[in-house]
Image (cartoon, rainbow, N blue to C red; front, side, top):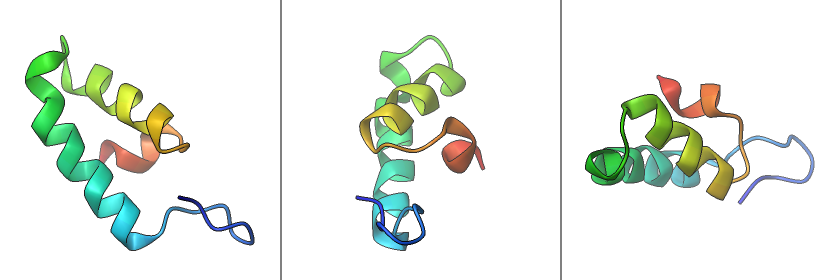
Length: 51
């Protein structure tokens, strides 16, 4: 969930999204494809999760 005032992911949501990327990486052709997929689900840009 994003904050309405800053439009940034909360630290908890960001941590969960990063864990989800690693968990679902085998389901996608590349890590970037996984990042893009998860970013869409948590309403952020992929670059937020890239690092």
